[in-house]
Image 1 (tube, one colour):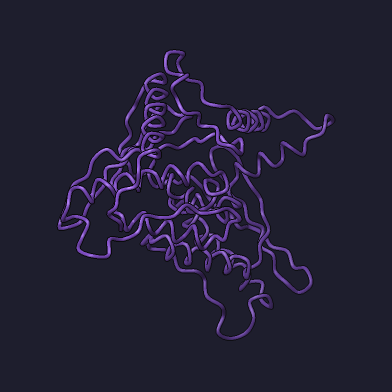
Image 2 (image 1 turned 90 degrees about the vertical axis):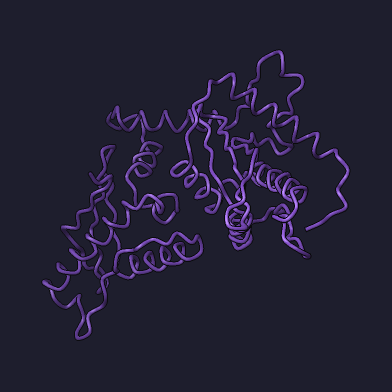
Amino acid sequence: MLAYTVNIDDYQTMDDKVYYQINVYCSDGHRKISKRYSDLKALNEKIIEKNSNFKLHLNLPQFPGRKIFGRTKNSVAGIKQRGKELQKYLEEVLNIKQLQQFQSIKDLLPQQQLYQETIQLTPSDEYDKEVCWLQMDELKRSFLERQEIKTPKNIKSKCKSSLNTNGYVQRYHFSIDDYEIQQDVVLYTITLTDAKKTTNYQFTSRYSDLREYHKLLKKENLKVELPVYPKRKIISQTNENPLFIQERQEQLQKYLNDIFAIKELVQSEPLQYFITKIKLEGKAIRVGPVQQKQQICTRSILYESQENLPERKSSF
């Protein structure tokens, strides 16, 4: 069953331009938007770019082409036919899970529209339980983001706070506990802990895979200093020496926790997609809330101790 369905059953002509009336439906609500063919073509180009930059390897639907002869807007039948083609295209695109974390796709989905409508309500507006629930949920989420993670009393004094100097509470924490070598490639076993959930996620990744996200973050041109990504080893291969692997393992763990401690980076598309991909494809591990908090604190203490260790002479 499709999560989203699309219906284009009408259009408007303004200033000699055709605007398609697009209805997007899901189980939680409905959103109506007005878009020109050129707007959706620009969206398609963005999707192609994301597919390439994020190496998604998605088999994307074909975007409806322009008419070879004549102009679509001069024919009612042509406009309606193009509407059907755009409807089919949009429905396919909106149901691709890997794309749903990108802002250009989020802007078309109903739930966001429902929340935008709630913040515009005035006391005289009609009460809507579903809409008001969404507003309360958003307010709750916003409140939780401002709260520091509470820890059990017996370890609270030892635990390094997740609250950084800018007042941002780090939500995502990473630990790299193991590795294996497959076909001369080192695969690191990484555990993601989400401080707001009682489920951890375990996944494997190569050094080069994580480096691709670093490259994407650099392209974002955000106004924050990006932590340095661990350098490649110049002479010989890392997988030839267990000590080199361990050193890189520590460096990658530090890098992941450093970038996820910066709010502006966490809110960027590359890291939003990174988290979504982990939760979609990683191995889910249920943990209790107390156990989870202990894990976060233990990792924070280890992370702090690693920061205080003198640097090794070997470099990458």
